Image (cartoon, rainbow, N blue to C red):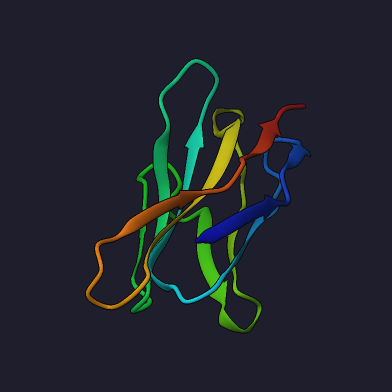
Length: 121
């Protein structure tokens, strides 16, 4: 199994920055992609940023140019640097891992517990 623990959320003023971290633990897993989702109040969860094992990234249109997803393989940690934050970025942010126990196994989804990001003056 894989466990994900997020950190780095908080309250920030519009225009400010935050960096979210997601540390992955577990044994014998092959990760295929790491993703950040968010769920604004009263809305559905949406995909914000993705990072594949090969290093490809993808972003929601609403965050392109402001958010950057990256990884530190030595620390088993994925980050999302968020800049120029807007009130509409307020949400609970979730780390997601798509992984498999072996190269030929079906993918498994794991989720972190979520971290609150509030953008407000």
